[in-house]
Length: 361
Image (cartoon, rainbow, N blue to C red; front, side, top):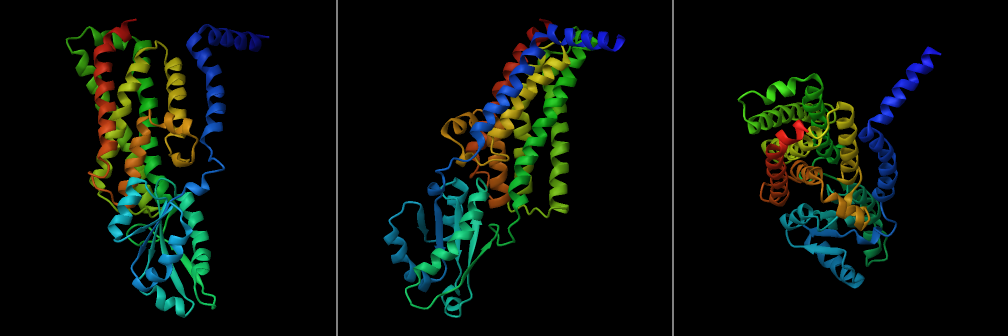
C-alpha cells in the first residue's frame, strides 16, 4: 500500500509540472512524425549525378560518344581532377569517377579498373553507383569481345574508402552539441533550484559576463568530448583527415558555440531541471535526425530538407565532412561558416540581453 502511495505521489507531481507533462506527450509524437520524413524517397535514384574525369584520352574518346548518346543530365564530364573534386565539394555530383591513364591498356587484357570517390553528403548512393558502373562500362564497349571492369572505392587522396570517414565528422558535431544540451540544464536550471543563481545575480558581475562565462565553459566541455571522438576515430577506426586539422577544430568550436545561445535561452526559461532537460531533448533529437548525421539530406523529401536548414548542426556536420573527407579549404566552406557565425552571434546576443529577465521570472 505504501508503495502505491509513493507511486501516486510521483505521478501527481509529474502531472502538476505542466511543461514536463506536455513535452512528455509531444516527444513520442514528434519522433514518429520525424521518422516518416527522414527515410529516402523511392524516386531518388535517377537524381544522382555522376561526374567523370578521364586521365586516359583513348578511353575518353572511346566512351564519350556513348555517354553523349545517353542524353542524360546526371552524367557530367570534367576536364581536370580539380574540377571533379570541386563539384563533389559543392554537392553537384553524388560520386566522382576517375578513369586512370592505363585504363585502355588494361581493358585490352580484361583487367581494367576505375576509381570512384563518393560524395560525403551521400556515401550510400556512391556505393550503389560503384556497384553499377562496371556493368555500364562493359556495355559501352564497341568491340564484340567482353571486357571486365572493376571499381575501387577511394577517398579523395587515393587512400582506401572507409565508411567511418563519412560518419565521424557528423558524430563529432553531434556529440559536442549533446554535451552542451546536458551541461546547460545542469549549469543554469540546477543552479536556480539550489538558489545559487540568485546569489550570482546580485553580485556586481555583469549579465553578459555570466552568459559568456557559461558559453566558454560549455564550449570547452563539448570540444573535449568531440576531440575524444576524433582521437578514437583516428587511432581505432583509421579515419584519415584529408583537410586541415586546425580547420576541423575551428568548425567544431564554431558548431558548439552556435548552439549554446539557443540552449541558454531555453534552459533559463525553466525553473526545474527536469523540464529544461526534456525541452532540450525535444529540440535536439529532431535536429540530430534532420541534420544529415545518419541519413543523407539529399534523399529526404522537400519538407525535411527545408526543416534541416534551420538547425546549426546541419551546417556544422556538412562543413566537417567536406574538410575531413574531401580536403576542403576555408573558402570552400565559407557559406557554412557564415551561417554558424550568424547563429552563434545572434543567439548569444539575445541570450545576454534576456538572461536576467528569464532567470528572474
